[in-house]
Each structure stands twice: as structure tokens, then as C-alpha cells.
Length: 73
Image 1 (cartoon, helix red, strand yellow):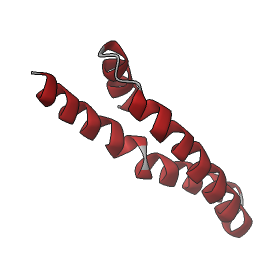
Image 2 (tube, rainbow, N blue to C red):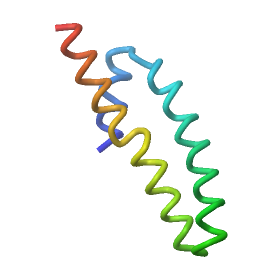
Image 3 (cartoon, rainbow, N blue to C red):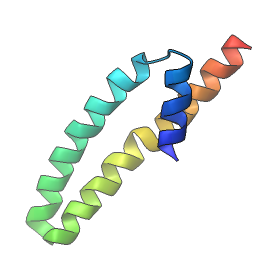
Image 4 (cartoon, rainbow, N blue to C red):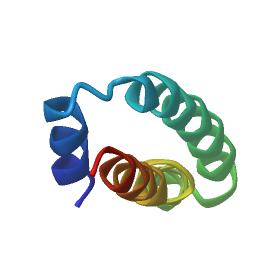
């Protein structure tokens, strides 16, 4: 899902969003995995990964791609 939009943005030479959103995903992922792992164990790590993915690239890359593709057309 997100890799498709990442590749499309890279082919359009639109890398700024990736430089911004991927470090945010890593930061959110680290914090949420740590927090949820303390409370839910190994399942908490999965919760943290899902949450970081959902808060960042899951919606960010498709929205940015749609914005840029309409703007360039």
C-alpha cells in the first residue's frame, strides 16, 4: 500500500514528504512500542507498529501523492 505511493512520489522526484514523515514514523514507533510493550508485552510491540503506521504513512503518502499529482496536471 504505502510502498506504491512512496515509489510514485520518488518517480516524481517528490522526496520532501519522505524526509519528513519517515523520521516521524520512527519516533512514534519507538515511543509507542516501548510504552505498549511495558503494558501488553510482545503484543504491545505490534500495537505500537500498527499505531505508528496508521498515524503517518498510511494516510500521509496517499494524500500527498493526490495533492501533488493534481497540482502537476
